[in-house]
Image 1 (cartoon, helix red, strand yellow):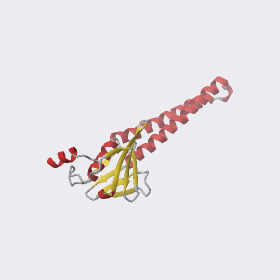
Image 2 (cartoon, rainbow, N blue to C red):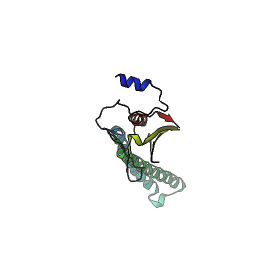
Image 3 (tube, one colour):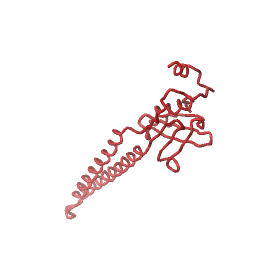
Image 4 (cartoon, helix red, strand yellow):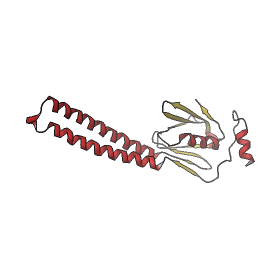
Amino acid sequence: MFEVQERLLSPSTGVRRAAQILSQQPILLRNNRVLIFLSFFGSLVALGIALCMTIVAARCFLPFSTLNLDRFAAGALWAFGAWLMAMTQVFLWRQGIYMGNCSVLLDAHGAHFRLDNTAGGEVFMPWNGIEAVHYKNIENVQKFTILGADSTTVTFTSASFYRPRRVARLIADHAGLPLMRG
């Protein structure tokens, strides 16, 4: 316990030591499964609403013999709403897939990133190859960047993980670096 307190109380700028805070067991960090489920469930609900709105729009247009300007305007609005709900369904489904595919494995050798936005799908950074861990708050999104010694960068946001600051803090602690704003 003394080593942990010494690490936490020591000045962090310019200090580069491997932290022994976490155990030697590999740690797999994923997104919250409840959020992933809610994203897929919301997508299915949006699909049902879009189908119902399409039926209402069709009922406004049919039969053509009773079509007037008011019924046409109502049908066009229902059709536009159905299209918007269909786009919401697509967005939520893609968000659920993205959140389900993001993970970080922290082991004794380094960090294995599996993010959809990385080239090749998976990036490995050894602990001594991590130069800095940066974070930036942009409106309602937290953005975290891990800079590697070989000019490799890994970026993830709060859309990738439920608690991205916790993920970045664990990586910074393992690498013996401070979590810097910027």
